[in-house]
Length: 384
Image 1 (cartoon, rainbow, N blue to C red):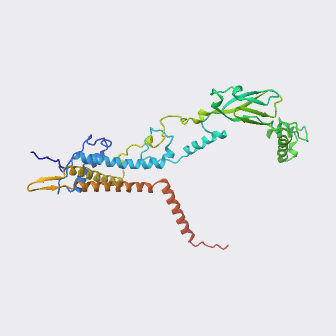
Image 2: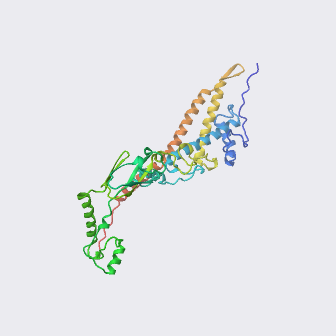
């Protein structure tokens, strides 16, 4: 029965485009140059030429591509987590790998503006208006049958946000006791914007706070001694105070509930929404510094150990004259798993140490330490 021939590392290799499974970095000249070097380094680290290495060039190229991709993946994952608040809402067409992402308040302001919908300031919900014809002597109105709604079919679809029912401004009933006819005083009054509201033209004889107190007195008088302007809204029943003394038009503002409940109100669909579509592409190998490349080579060696361990586990023993050789497949698999985990942990710790929060905490610690040192420096006393 013929013996199984196990392919072994020949000692040299020549990288060409298409040698890796995905070809992410095949066009990168530095990746192509380091592919054969790293393959030779891994083989020698595994014991070549003292022992045969049951791997081929494509195995080492695959391990090299996986190592670069894993490094890129870990760095990109960290940057997405650290910058998600600043990335949301940006275009997905921009490659953000190795780009400086500036801090901005767009998402915070957008979230804050949504709360402004309830108070009538900001947000993406459109306020609509409707009118109600008030009749003389009629105080109660059924809005479900009286309102002409825009953008809604039934009363239950809308929410009234504001009813424009206010008392006449106090300034319209302001009469100054000092009435003059001087054109100079009239012109000065016009600069305050009060010239068209009152026959009084000699306001310059009194301080401003006296006018404000008089306006306040008029408003308090209306609230306490008269039926103040107000309303009650229960379900679709509106009660007007005081009872209308003339046929007038009452305006109100409302929103369509479906507009507020709509979560898809962005101006475009090609925007970063979450972790899944943040545009971080694979980092080119030539753009990675020496520290990163060293990590890649070590991870590549661990992947090569894993592949070699799987092969040697399948061929647990190799027969030879007068005996057989037991291979160390299980041992290589254990080493590979431990080394890969240690390398990923080390990289994540380094990335976490450079996060925005960590850098700010370090700067604060440095500032406090520097301040303590400066406080110990004697301060000179100057005598004039």
